[in-house]
Length: 373
Ligand code: SF4
Image 1 (cartoon, rainbow, N blue to C red):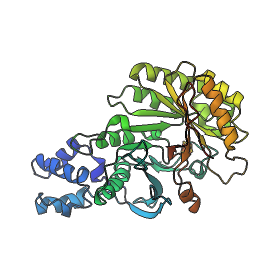
Image 2 (image 1 turned 90 degrees about the horizontal axis):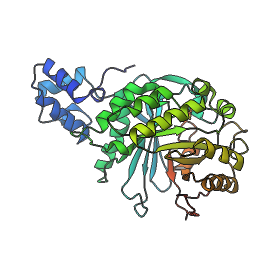
Image 3 (image 1 turned 120 degrees about the vertical axis):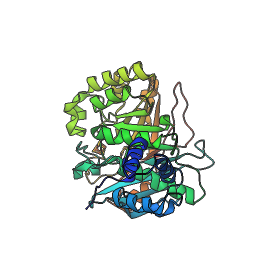
Image 4 (image 1 turned 45 degrees about the vertical axis):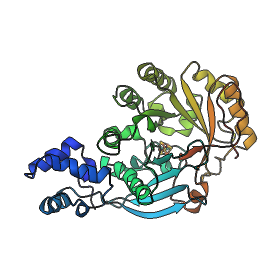
C-alpha cells in the first residue's frame, strides 16, 4: 500500500526545494522536470544527465507513482482506449484516451478523460461509479500520471501529443479541488507539457463553491456543469446529493462565472427515456438557461444495471434537441466513444467520455449535430 509523495505530486518550485535540500543545485530540478514532462521518462535511470547518486536518492525519496494498468480495452477502430488502473493502495480508477479520425474536423486531437477520485460520493442514479460509492480523493500525482501515461505512449508510437484533458472520469473534481488544480498547473507548465488551459475542461455536477473558485483562477480552463434535469425535484431524484446545491443557485454561479471569465459554460444533460427527455422538459431547460453564453451537450444515457433507466430512442433524442434549438439554445448530441468496450467490461466506466457525433446536422439557427442512437 502506497500513496507516498511522488515526483508527479510536486510543482517545479517544490521539486527545486527538494533537490536543494539534497545538496544539489536547483537546475537539476529543471532537468528532472524535463525528463518527466517532455520526454515522459518512466524511471530516474533514464535521466542520464543527472548524477547517479542524485538519481538513487530521488528514486528512494520521490518515486514515480505506484500505478499499474490492470486492463486496457480498445474500440474496434482503435481510436478509443480505456484503462483500468490499480493505484498503490489497490483502489481502481479508469482513464480513457480518445483519438479522432484523422479525416474529421478534429484532426490531431487527442483527449484524455481522467478520474479525480477513486469512486464518487455524488450517487447519480444512472452512473455505475456513483452507485459503487466513494473510496478516496486522488493525489495530484495520480491525476497527472493518467495523462503522462498516455502521452508517453503517443510519443513512443510517433503520434502527436495529448492536446485535451477532460476531468469527466470517476469522481467530482470540485470535491478534490486542490489536487485537481495542482494537476492543471503541472499539465500547463511551459517547461513541461505546456498544454493550453483552454483545452482542459473541469466537469462538475454542480459544486457551487468549486464553480466560484474556478471563476477566480488565472488559468482559463473550461467549465462543464452536469444538470440532467430542468427542475429541482427531478434533479434530486437523479443526483441524490443535489439538494446541497439548489439548481437556481448553480445557475446563478454559472452566470457569475460567465460574467467574470467571459467564457462559455457547457451544460451536460444525460438523456433518459421517459425521465427527462420530453420536449416540455427541453423547453423548461431552455427557460432556465435563457440568455446565457452556454452550450448544451445531450448525452443519451449508457445502459445501466437499473432497468428503469434506458436510453431514449433516436426520435425522442432529436425531438428534445429540436425543442432546445427552437428556443435558441446551442446544443449538440454526443455519443460515447468506445461504447462496445464499456459493454465488454462491466468495471470499465465511460459514460461521460464522449465525442461529438459526426452525422450531417439538421442545421437551424443553432449549431446542432445530430446523433444516431
Ligand atoms: S456521474 Fe459523475 S458526479 Fe455523478 S456519480 Fe458518476 S462520477 Fe459521480
